Length: 251
Ligand code: ADP
Ligand code: MG
Image 1 (cartoon, rainbow, N blue to C red):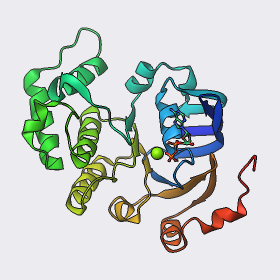
Image 2 (image 1 turned 90 degrees about the vertical axis):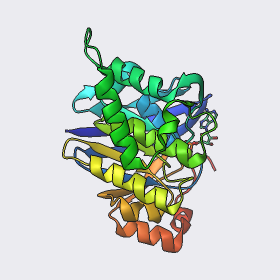
Image 3 (image 1 turned 135 degrees about the vertical axis):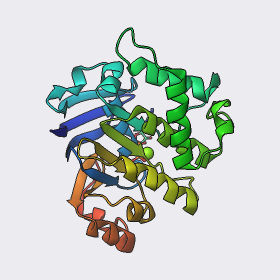
């Protein structure tokens, strides 16, 4: 059982960005996706979540045998898909605590009520792990949060929602070294035989803490390399020099 992506093509505003992605993340595994800016990493993550601006033109995505592309955004979320955004949205006028409560409540079966006491217990426990100031619960979602606070807030949402397929899009950018270590601990604590992770990052620093099982390089809308942790060392050393061997389609 796993997340399986087959020959996925997707466009945004009429331009094809993903040009045949093949990727399989078995349950229990954490895969890193690296690659130059503009190669389509965020696009891939948004397509999986069902963002309306990103149009799948062909290909398939399967979640444990369920056809993801036939599911609504809400169904995907209920099935356990979660994306920590590269650029988290600000939601003025909605307190962070209310936002998180509504997100959790929305996941519960019809007629079941989330207990406020249970909610705050979970919330404060997760905030404790992430070293987050409790004052952030009463502030508007991400409004005026520092870069690092926003990224921690994404991981906080992930910890509370307990997803089966977690995608982290450059969650390490904007974090200082201590925050990076803390956030990594949060991610590592969630690793389980039942969960798949896709971690998008540019940096080895994160992957030293969050050891990936498999590393992929996405370039020109395709996965051009797949390997083990040694690929991270190679990229750190040589950069994306090897991409010269891959002709950019259309050029
Ligand atoms: P990465 O995350 O690998 O840096 P993205 O997936 O964000 O790359 O972007 C891939 C390409 O798609 C870029 O050329 C980017 O400008 C374009 N793109 C992504 N989202 C949009 C959008 N909403 N509107 C227009 N172009 C977009
Ligand atoms: Mg991106």
